[in-house]
Length: 119
Image 1 (cartoon, rainbow, N blue to C red):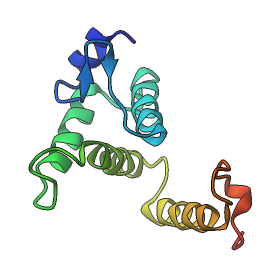
Image 2 (image 1 turned 120 degrees about the vertical axis):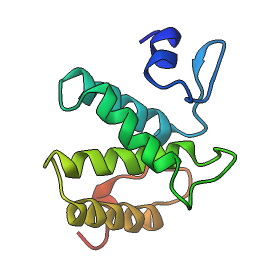
Image 3 (image 1 turned 135 degrees about the vertical axis):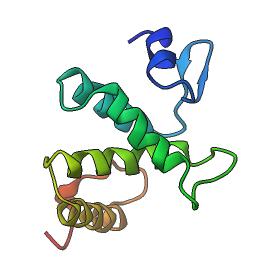
Image 4 (image 1 turned 90 degrees about the vertical axis):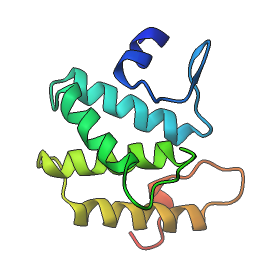
């Protein structure tokens, strides 16, 4: 995807002259998942834009946009649930497993779900 494609798909996407800007790997991964799911036909870009817009305009969203990718992730979770791909309880369970794995992972090592002591 070119930087022009990214700007067209999401005009509020944090970017510089080289394209989208990500502060952490998870942001790039969430971005890539949305693009891939759209390209596979799970949802139209209008559906995505509406869902993301709802999150960006939520009362608890940061006025300065500093939580843009948090909104992106919440929108992705809502879209997956609304399309019946995965339900909110499964998302919550996986989130908790990820947090447990993160706490159990030594500093500097990759976080792997296999490290979840509760699995």
